[in-house]
Length: 634
Ligand code: FES
Image (cartoon, helix red, strand yellow):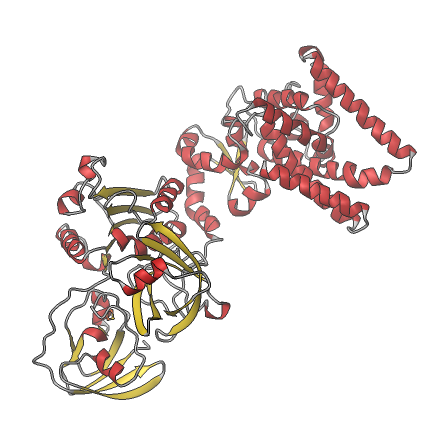
């Protein structure tokens, strides 16, 4: 219905513009021809009764669309002729009306394309006795009316106007329709529909991102011949869902460039080329271009309620900051604002896909939490918050050609970084699979509940969610309660390439131990904590030190008092060093030790490789040598 309205509007516009001399003749022909081409798809789906379950709706749309495509034939006659084409595809005994082009010698093909209604009318005349009287009368009236209009226009000097507005665009559209709907899917196939319905029509595979919208899905015309009642916009999805079954039956497949593929060649072609072809429109995630984490004011574009106690905040990123706020899935940003004269800063994971152009965070309300209460109750579209450029390294590099198995385990708001990771991974790695174990109190308290459902439907073959509910007596018993070792054991896939864990400290540390006990490599178990353990501060055993700090390209000398962390000494000296959680969990305060040594109290953010490379969390680092140098810029 949408393309019907769009095509009628386009035809109306080009007609009006041509009548007012506002468009050159070639442009009018192009626009009106495009509109007629699109209207054929409406007519085609109407002929198969796949626009609506109400028969009269299909007939109504079909009748209108038919007038544009060919005013010589009634909708009912067209539907009859077209169904005969389905029944007898590729038969050269005259029972397939479309064989006029699909079976033509190559040199006649361009001349036959714009005359497709000639074999249709001939076919109708040959079968006139089989058709209902009303249908024959309707077609006869339409033919007579069409001839009368042409003659009238010629006698009144308007023939060129009629040709420009309708006759030429109609022939141009018919040329393309015969070429794309008939010749491309059927030419040079020897089997008829009766003999082998899988080889009487072919699919053209590859470059779907451009061909599917351009051909209105007729690049998958075989799906249409196998399942004529499926509407055109579902052909590709139907093929993908049943691909193995079609290949088992030796379905006819050609590439965009005409190469014919048998099922094993197709599988190989898909492995080598298909992924690249599908990847073209996907943008790869980039890291922030900022040298070191820094704050910028950014307006709020939307504040939407996610659950009763959480909101989704989308930012309106100014163009000049886009590169600085580029992010990888799993990264987070720190929000700083002034609430009642008091500066607060909080760290939130980015939950939007890194392949998208949006930056979103989700804020869950914490009783007495200053910022979360403000976000839930007062924050409005147009307000400005100070955002620190993205930091963190929870995610893992993605490879479009990878074929991996991922598992994520999240509880409550722990879904936020994982939601970004899941969306981005599924979009980029088109062969990888993802299983998400997600724990919540109940369905209503589940953040991104509907978005995850949609994602699961969209990637049904590669994405699975196992939902645990701790306070929902109607939830299946084996999925009731919190996620723990016992529950998880039975669900984990045998071979997993990467794990992502985010949620309460106890759950995350316990499940991480479980995965390591099961043989997972430590570097493949990625952990994100929103809060570190609140360990009592050790006050003894530390010494003062001279600390050299490199921050945003400048060097500063700082004196560190015994017991202070490197971060505290930098902040006390007035430096705007980056930090957020102060608990060793977020990694925002990461720096590299260039000289001397430090001891970290706790570390939930850096990987073993990071530590090996000399990185430390400055919020947790105490010097153990008299001089220390750290660099926040590397
Ligand atoms: S500020 Fe979060 S780990 Fe240091």
